[in-house]
Length: 348
Length: 278
Image (tube, rainbow over all chains, first blue to last red; front, side):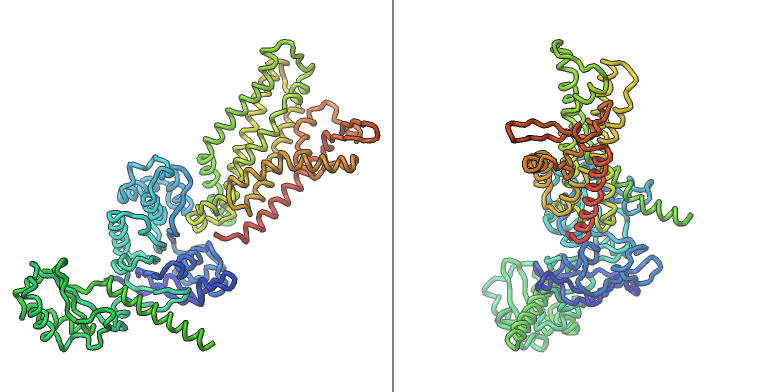
C-alpha cells in the first residue's frame, strides 16, 4: 500500500504569457509524495512550458511554485532553490554534447553531487538496464533518437532523485523501448519515487499514472484519478474476449440474448456517435464490447451473468480498457472546454 | 569555516564544468596546437633554414617581434572557434534543457569560459614555447624579459577578444554564424573602420579597435618602446593627401582598451544572458 501523505510540489496560480498568448493560465496543482501524476494534453497545451517553469528554466509571468525541501517543508522555488529534495528532469527531446555516455553521465552525476565513488556503479547499472552498456564509450552523435531518449531518462535519474519529471519520455522510442521505460517507471513507483509525466500519449499515461491532469489551452481542465474521471463519462465501456470466433449465423441470437440479460445495466442514453447498439461484436478480435452505466456494481453483475448464463462463449478475458476510457474522458472534457470557449467568445 | 565550505560547494559545479569543457574541446585544442606549431615553423624557421639569403634579425627580441605575424590570426581564430558557442550553443542545441536544472546557468558559463580560456591560453603557450625554442636555438639564452611581457599581453588580448565573442554569443542564435560574424568583425571590420577614420582624420588614434590594442603583443618587444606619438605611427604624404597607419597604442592606453572591452563585453553579455530563456 503506497503511503501518500506529504505534498512534494504545489503550483499556485501559475501563469506564463508570451505577449497575448497565455501558454499557461492560472494553473493550480498539488502532487503528493509517492504519486505518479500524468499531465496530458494536445501539442501546444502548455505541458512543456509548465515543466520548464518547474525546472526553473523558464520564469513564470505570475504565480508560485512550492517544492518540498530537505526538511520536509514546502519552499518557494522562485525565491530559494537551495536544499530542495533531489529532482531529476527529462525535458523535451534531450540534446547532448557530442561525447560518450560515460563522460556525459559522470559530469551530470557530479553536478548533482552524487557520491564520486558510486557514480561508476550507478552508471553501469542504468546503462545495462536500458541496453546501452555496450555504447558506453561511443560518441552520442552516432546514437539514434530512441537511444538519446533513453540516455535522457538515465541522466534524469543518475543521481537517484526523489522527484522525477519526465516530459514525453516515450517520444521516438520503439515499442520494446517503450515497454522498458514503462517497466522502469513502475519500478521507480515501487521505490516510492514521486513521478510527474507529461505526454500526449494517453495509453502510456493510463498504464502508469495514479492521477491525471488534463491540460488544454494552458489550463488544467480536470485533475483526478482515472476512476473518478470516468464517473463523469456519459458512457463506459467493457470488453470481453471469446476463445473461438462466433459464426455469423449464431451471432444475432447471442447479441440479442446478451442485450436482454444485460439490459438493467446498459447505458440508456448511449451516444450514437460512440455506438448505435449497446452490445457489439468484433469478429476479427473475437471481442464483445458492452456500453454500460459505469457503476462498479453493474460491472460485477455483468460478469456474473456472463459466467453463469453464457458458459458456451468460453470467455478468456473481461476488462475495462483504460485507454479508450481515457480517450473518451479526454475528448469529452476538451470538447466541453471548446464549447465553453465558444460561448464565452459569443457572450463577449 | 562554514562560509568556506559553502564557497567550496558553490565552486564545485564550476570545477566540474571546467574539467568537462577541457575534455569536450580537447580535439580542437590539439588541432589548433598542431597548426600553431606548423605556422611558427613556417614563418620563423623555414625561411632561414632553406633560404640562407634571408638575413636573420640582429637581436633576439627583434626576431620574436618580426615573427609574430601569425599570432593575432591564430588568436582570433582560436578565440572565435572556442568561444562562439559558449552561450548560444546551449540554446540552439537545447543542451540547456539537461544542464540548467542541474546547474546555475552562470556557473555553467563561468566553468565553460575558464575551460576555454585555459585552452586558448594553452595554444598561445604553444606558440610562444615554439618561438622561444627557436629564439634560443638561433640566439642562445636567456630569453629576453620582453618576450614574457609579450606573452602576458597576449593573455590580456585573449581575455578581451574572448569576452567580446562571449558578448556576441549571448544574443546570437547559432554558433557557426557567431564564428563568421566575429571573425569578420575582428579581422576586417575593425581595420576597415580604422582606415576610413584615419583617412578622414589622421590624428585620430583608433583606440576603439581591439586589433589596434592587440598590436601591443608585438610592439612591446621593441627594446625601446615608441613612447612619443610620432613614433607610434607611420605615414606617407602624396601631394596634400596624408595616409597614416597607427602601429601601436601606448602601453597604458592599450591595456586600458583591452580591460574596458573585457569589462563592458562581460557586463552586456551577463545582462543579455540573464534575460535569455530556453
